[in-house]
Amino acid sequence: MNDTMRKVAIARKIARPNTKEFIEDIFEDFLEFHGDRLYADDGAVIGGIASFEGIPVTVVGIQKGHDLEENVKCNFGQPGPEGYRKALRLMKQAEKFKRPVITFINTAGAYPGIGAEERGQGEAIARNLKEMSDLKTPVISIFTGEGGSGGALALAVADTVWMLENGLFSVLSPEGFASILWRDSSRVEEAAALMKMTAKDLMKDHVVDRIFYEPKEGIENNLKFTTDQIKDALRETLPELRGLSIEGLLGRRYKRFRQYGEFME
Image (cartoon, rainbow, N blue to C red; front, side, top):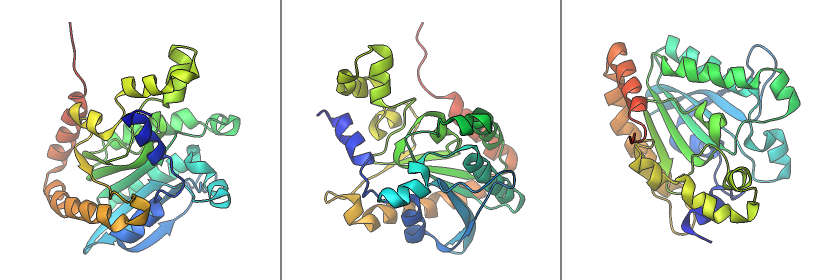
């Protein structure tokens, strides 16, 4: 197993801390909100208001479970359109009350079921991308595990993007990449290496701005090791972003996304 596939295995571990555990360890007075005001509540997306050392914030994240029962409730961390619309409702509320938004991302991707497509899955994701690009409040996104395609990007149009050491972000899974490109799923390790989906690779391409290290004994055994780093980063970054004018904030966000990748002639 190459290093990238090792990270894929770690990111997918069922014992890996979920969004609710990160929220409990980082923030105070979390109050969860439910529903998208259009169709239903989606257990795959958790969100609400909280406090970070006296600063009111809005927190939104994709939730996974630690066993079958929990995963059924949160659809194995695959949001439907109502989940993305709930997230957007909370982010627009944060904009209204000038609260910074912090998102947590750990998903294999948006749910591809027939019902989700009938209810406008693609539209919900696209609307999040559009609205987040112009959201007039600071946005910080943190990849804590998998980051699969548009289902992850719908919560990651941010002023700064952070990632855990064993986090991932890619257009699809290595298995899907190998099956589509070579019609051979056995070449999954080769695909993973080519995709440049790890935190280290993404930082080189300016997709990720900061990496948080994980304990050698596994983050599920010592979450505080990593959340202490996240808290330090929030203490540094929140005052900086909150101090920018709306024009400065949006201009910086635009430039951040324009610098992605390299162009060769």
